[in-house]
Image (cartoon, rainbow, N blue to C red):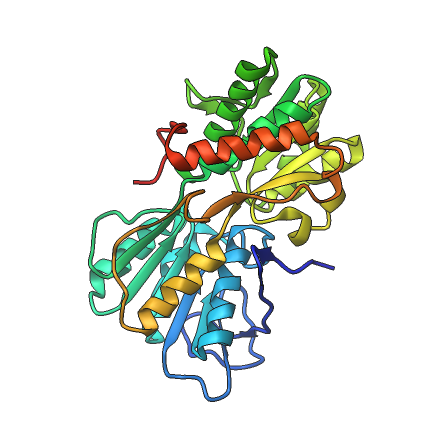
Length: 361
């Protein structure tokens, strides 16, 4: 049974009705890769819509967390929502078009892979608002809002923790696809490990990513959990005892391998302790508060305050963060916890700048 996703103090659950792609949502209708919609009684005629990438809305990661923000808008604002779940790259443009045809007041695309389809739709429909989660648009348009996150800041803290908790002196990270929104996690993680080594005179090694060369380990997709499991088994065989997969559902395969081997995982996008069944092996998570950003953007649009100004989640505005240590809280030394809090304060103040060529602009 899947756990509910929590981001900060927010927990959202909603029942979604299914409908065919390109047609008006109707309760009880189901088709693969089609649009879904849900409404509350007495809701306004404001229709907020969302298209997932191929990971789907139950990826226990960024699609699901973004969808939770849309559910919150239905519950709190009384709007209507519609969804289109993509199962492959070929679904992106048709699913975005289905949202436009349904008359959505704002349409969200989740992830870098939706960038082309959503950019084209925004350019062709200047009277409709669009928001792209975790990526930027091909061009600046007054009806197109990028919602992006400087996850390198929070991943830096995770890397520091990993270096402080490893018993083998080796940690690892890998991505689903080599795109900026994945590599930015890996950049921050590697720098956090390097900072720990600098502070403590250690030589913890990072497997799976060379930041300077921008080269590392990727499964090539966000769907095949077997790929994540096999790659993680290779890292474990090389001695890694803490692994951070940045790969959506593929990370569940990594968690399965880690569970079998008795090593730890660092989850990404949401608090994996709460959103997955692998809580007992999750040391912490690098979180992007996509639910809050989605809700806020819908609220702005409902109130007539939508702008194309990018939203950039940072440690300073609580748009990104490090999850609690949960079951490992007593195992993490207080000295390490204090050091992480001090680093967080230095990043927020600007005394430490986590450099990455993959940072959102």
